[in-house]
Length: 226
Image (cartoon, rainbow, N blue to C red; front, side, top):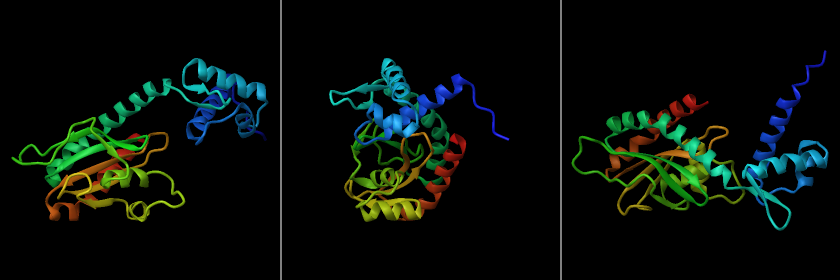
């Protein structure tokens, strides 16, 4: 017996969301024909879906006729970041008390790692720190490695990224702050941007034992967001 067909409105919503996801993940955007083929629908339906998304500024049509993500997605991303930060914040505070080092939550934006939340140990007189909103290239530091490891494996990626994905965390020394150790764990939740927990410290013994502790905390965040 065949499963009942979903209501027309639900089917249209599903197609629209799939269309938005396809545009967002396409390296160089999509044409109407690309979407028509991918969804298995007539060009007129694909065109209406993309036009509706464009009306909401979620996608834009370039001069080459290809659709790419639009500025309207920024508001959605801001909401996602708020949810991610609110979920992670209490766990970050627990981590700081446990490991005695500055812990941060970072996300990937383009080619940069951006700090959403930074928590310092409240009882220490000297700590390494930086401000929420700080950013650095994805090619530097443990956070950059972890954020790239949160993405699907790609041809020619650095060995450090592959290693971090296999063992669950990245380690670097002196790449962002001279003389400082960095340890970072990817946070992978379907539908959310690549994120990571990052520890920074001058103390080698703290960094040496931080990977599994951060991984456990990251797993808690994933469970709460899934």
